[in-house]
Amino acid sequence: MAVSGGLRHDLHGRGQRLTPQRQRVLDLFERVGAGHHLSAEDVHLQLLRADARVSLATVYRTLRLLASMALLRELELPEGSRRFELASAEQHDHHHLVCAACGRTEEFDSAQVLQAGADAAAKHGFRLLSSRLTVRGLCGACAAAV
Image (cartoon, rainbow, N blue to C red; front, side, top):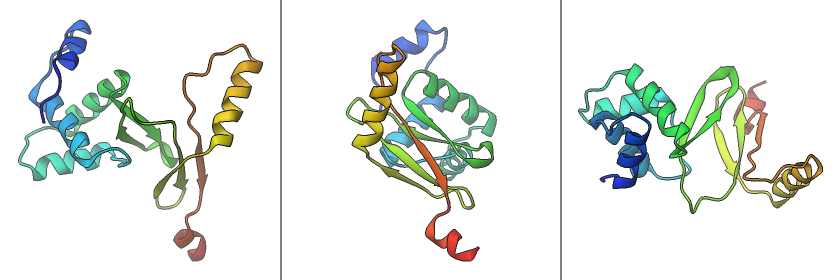
């Protein structure tokens, strides 16, 4: 999958260029699709399996850059680990349930969360752009093991 010329232009405007490594990372997220949450290590491993020679440090830098450009969304998990997912214009605000023990992540939608965000924004003079809630707890398997 080739990325649009718009990304090439956006990168150039930031003094960056579309390197083969950046293209491969973005292509990987486009292949796995929205709703898949990948860590830098997951991305690195999948790229190595595909015979792409890219360092883990390059993957980290690329993920941060693509997230800063709103091409990827970043999700912070317990213990400070981070996962990334593909961002798209069609994708609506959604929220995450994250297991504090194993890191399992599930997405959910909630009109009540969106409304609470809109209410809080209005109360404090903000215009709501998006809302995202991360609920940390224990998944069924981890809760049963405790």
